[in-house]
Length: 61
Image 1 (cartoon, rainbow, N blue to C red):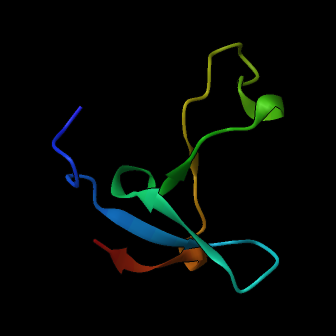
Image 2 (cartoon, one colour; image 1 turned 180 degrees about the vertical axis):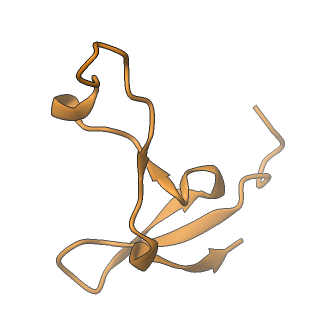
């Protein structure tokens, strides 16, 4: 755990509205898989899924 305020946040656009949510910068290009997407066809665990480049709006500190 870092110091208070050490995380840089990025705005990610929601899918069906003009709203946005804040995501840590570490996850700006990737998203966590849902329950139906957690495993690949060969049985390995999938940890990240590529995020659409259109969803990234900007940086908020």
